[in-house]
Amino acid sequence: MKNEQASTSQIHGKMVDFQRFAVTLLCVSVFFYLGTVIPSEGKTVFTTYIMMGVTVLFLVGSITFFMLSRKYKKILLDQDEAL
Image 1 (tube, rainbow, N blue to C red):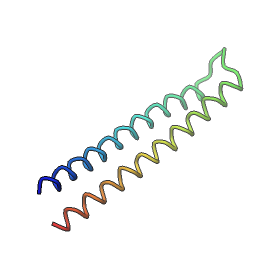
Image 2 (image 1 turned 90 degrees about the vertical axis):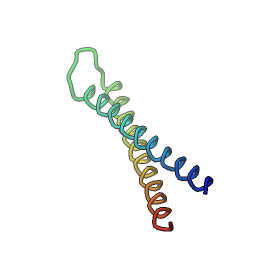
Image 3 (image 1 turned 45 degrees about the vertical axis):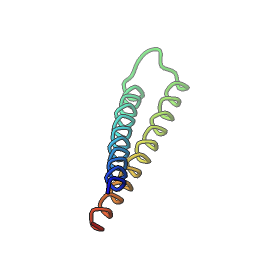
Image 4 (image 1 turned 30 degrees about the vertical axis):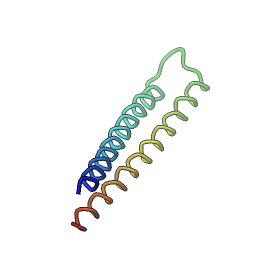
């Protein structure tokens, strides 16, 4: 019984952690995107491409973490149904 509770709490912890990582990456990608959209004097085309690349990379990471969080949420729901 304790193993099931420990396993459930670990899975819940992973789910919450992945959600936090995803939201954090999403927020950072928004700031990078705003940096590309807002005009400034010292910005070159190269820096704009770099910021857009980082924005896309962080969005992909955020989507990945949201998918992992959803996976662990389904595992938790399956465990609850099995009980």
